[in-house]
Amino acid sequence: MSHESLYYDLLEAIKNGECPICSVALRAVASWMDSVSYESVNDPQVRDSLRASYGFCNKHAYQWLDQRHLLGTAIIYSDVLEHINEDLQQLEYQRRDLITSVSTLITGKNIHEHHSKVPINSTKVCPACTVQAESEKIAREAFLEGLSEQEFRSTYEHSLGLCLIHLRSALQLAPNSKIFHFLKEHSIKQNDGLRKQLLEIIRKHDYRFRFEPITEERGADLRTIRHIAGEAGIRGLDLDKT
Image 1: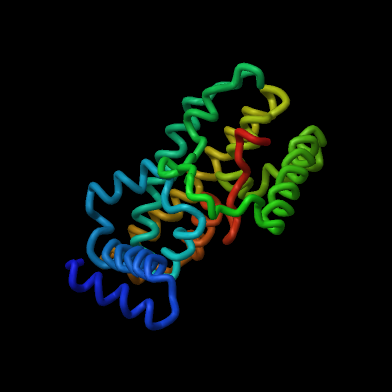
Image 2 (image 1 turned 90 degrees about the vertical axis):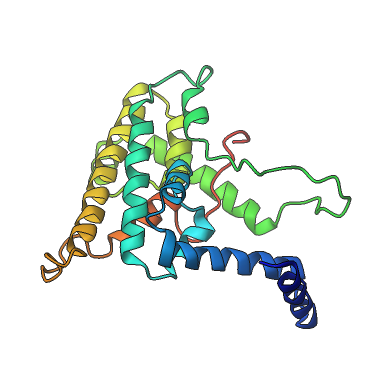
């Protein structure tokens, strides 16, 4: 974007009563996603970056879904699922007072996070966010306790399982190695199943197979996004504070 173009974009936003920086930033993200969707989905640098970041964050994962790019989603997230499983394979159970591998391998921390010294920051967390965080914490504790019950464990075993956001915290706080390895192996199995469906989407986009009927892979793009990014609006728990 040229300096002149940026100037007029900022000016237009101001005239429209918008925060100009917010406006430009949001447009830039939308423009970048359009570029990835139509031109860069097979760009090695873009794919390596998304693979390393486990795909998009929650907000941008759902913004990406709005692109309605089924093949692009399958290509990107088949890579992501493979990478997640590579990381999961390296994990070993450690006692909670010594645990480091989970927090260092899959903390998902935002590398751009910083603390502003400008004295206009809110001194309190949004109350709705507080309620959500507390509810997630309580639910997580109940979930880990429930895995000790056969019926609960069996039901979970036949489900897609926790999203990656909550798998992280569950693995970190697993009360014993049995539950840790159960969650780990279950996630690897489900990731493999989703990746198989995404690869089938890719295969059926080949002109030689495009007339084959869509079967179990239908909706795999949305299932995968939810499985990795969590449901729309979920921010996840801060593992250092819970």
